Length: 262
Ligand code: HEM
Ligand SMILES: N[C@@H](CC(=O)c1ccccc1NC=O)C(=O)O
Image (spheres, rainbow, N blue to C red):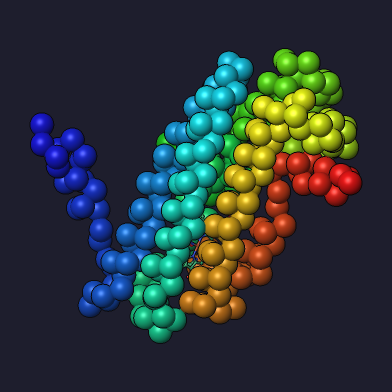
């Protein structure tokens, strides 16, 4: 056993293949930025997997430990945008053509994280029609309860009145805001001392969503400074499309309850 063999470095460090001809100096940055993000996404999925399993076993404290780690991963992923932000528009344009129609749309791990957090959309599966293994992985994720689903089921098993239709909802679709859950969280937030562990868990989920939005925002700003308002290689409107994603929310009731308090 050696350092390199244990870590599979031969594979990892052989996996950077710039396509530009002659090779553009900055394409290496572009590739490694994506690869490191994908590695962090892999770990985030691993932790999300475990967090949901632990919730299903009613091990809330252990599940929150997983969430704490995911929050740190998200912080690194967000910070890391500053490396790519050193890529100027003219530098990027010199090799953007080599990327053809490839795009972040095709990141199966990113989509799986979105699904695990509850932003389900079966139509996104079609992107992976020509990649059977990725398609299978994402379809399995589509059918799995999200982190929020598992949290609400955990609450129901602990005496909270989570409506039955929410507990048995079709988990292949995105959760829709429900005032009855706001009532439940209002009870928690109005007496946090009495409901401390649930209160703490709710705040952890809000941190998770905040961090996700920070990543989306840095992506949007980096895209804006690099390609302005050009359309994306994946066929979207580009910046306008990415802006709309900032309106998405995984745990809507945890935000509505804030308006109610006071
Ligand atoms: C100069 C760098 C980048 C530019 C100009 C850029 C641009 C874009 C654009 C325009 C889109 C919309 C889809 C499209 O039409 O292509 C997109 C989506 C996406 N990009 Fe990037 N991107 C950059 C870097 C990155 C990096 C480093 C990652 C990290 C993995 C990433 C991940 C994604 C993901 C996951 C999506 C899908 C988002 C969603 O569906 O909500 N991008 N990007
Ligand atoms: N959508 C980007 C291209 C791009 O960023 C990209 C291309 C290939 C592999 C990953 C990418 N990253 C994220 O979208 C663009 O329109 O320039």
